[in-house]
Length: 146
Image (cartoon, rainbow, N blue to C red; front, side, top):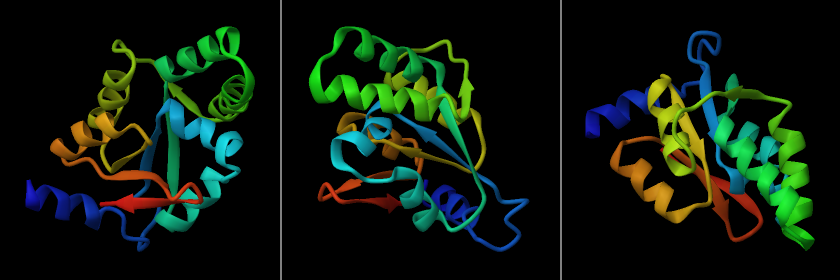
C-alpha cells in the first residue's frame, strides 16, 4: 500500500498538468460546506491541489441533495439547494451504488483520484483503499491527506 500512495502522490505533481489531471470526487456534505461554513470549497481545492483537476459528482450525491431539498428544513435545506446548484455545474457520474458506496465506486474507477468529504466513516474506508482525501478542518478551511 505504501508504494501505491507514493505513486498517487506523484500524480499530483503540478509539472505537466495536462497529463496529470486529478479527478476530485465530491461527497454530499462537502457540497453543503459553502452555506454551512461560508467556505469556498472550489477555491480551497485550487489552493490544495495547485494543478488541473476535474470535479466528479456521483449521481447518488445529486439524488441525496434533492431529497434534502424536498424534505429538509432551515440551514440544511438551504445548504442542499446551493450544493445541488454547484453539483450540476460539474460532471455528474452515473453510479450503480448509493451513498458512500457510490463515492467509493467513482473513486476507484478513475485514475489520479482524490475524494473531498467530511464523513468520518467514509474517510476511514477510503484510507484503507489508499485513496487521497480532502476534508474540512476547524470549520474554516479544507486540508489534504495524501
